[in-house]
Length: 120
Image (cartoon, rainbow, N blue to C red; front, side, top):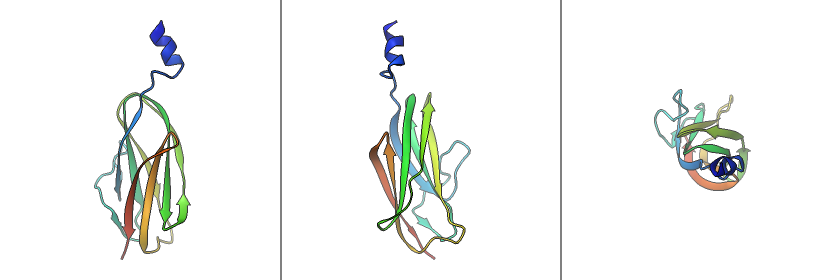
């Protein structure tokens, strides 16, 4: 009975951030197919946020080019085991050449970031 009460209050949730991957393509399970930090202007940039444990969380990513914010999508997730949550950045006109960054937030806290480069 105590365990059921703790779970109902959210105290039994232990979903935790594990790692991130960056690449040009994604597998059906949400993991990046091949890690890279170098992209062409027409590539889609994928980030896969890996979690472990069970529970729910809000996962957000912040895509930037220098100080310019390109997007801040977020997803509400609920998992029962290890999982990967995919986000992507794409541009129909192609990305300007330069140095970019993706920062990952887990329940409002910054937990990881990864620089990447768009070149010719």
